[in-house]
Image (tube, rainbow, N blue to C red):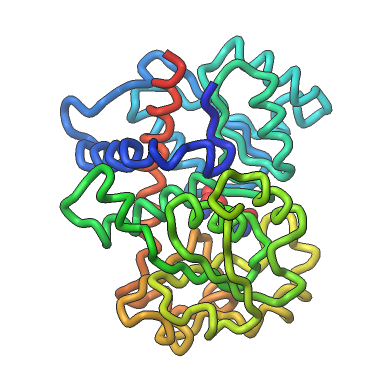
Length: 319
Ligand code: CP
Ligand code: NVA
């Protein structure tokens, strides 16, 4: 069973087809003859955290592919009252064709995948957010590989440098380290040393089959990280579930605001990206969010197209 719990659940060799499909689905959206590979299927979405982009893009995407999205707030189902993850996976597998899960503990998506008999997609855990990273990479290829498709799309990522600022221990930072290694990109991260990539993440990275075990560069100097960067990326400083640490996080991360000055220290044609939601005035200034090289809303839109490609690919892998 093919799942999408982490970036490396797709081999590099599978990426050209996936990215080309996302581009095709984007082009054909709303047109006659647009593919409907989920016809007759229901995909359940179990969410334990808030969401705007992920929820809406999956619900709309499943519908556009001919399927039926079934949104389940964790607290509305027995899982929220103590029914086991394993029994939930076994029961839902009797009804639906796939599970899309947003939760806290990453092991929950792994346990659902291990116990159920349908594909599972990670819609964000505390550890990783792979749907966002694949979407972001696809969004970069729209800028760097205009008018091409397939292998050339993915090749346009190779050797590019991404700089990730702020909370470099969060799900987005972890996922971008995996993504950069998968796509052949370089990644520099800058944040407070107490928010450097965690021991848990480093242990995981060592298990991945990247040449040399996977690489990244961490520094506490934001200007060092953005030097020669093709993309400057940030995320909120207070991820969902970390609200109790808000004051301390804002205090230690304040040197890592993406200001116009910091953005200008990257390559002169560098792109600014953010998974959103953004907190203007915290991790990034409004001026940078509004910069013509800020592609945050293309990124948001592309969640729809890339996730449709992922859904179609996982559904096809079952046939
Ligand atoms: N970027 C992202 O996942 O946004 P939501 O939390 O709104 O889904
Ligand atoms: N790191 C953020 C990402 C939100 C899309 C969080 O987990 O809240």
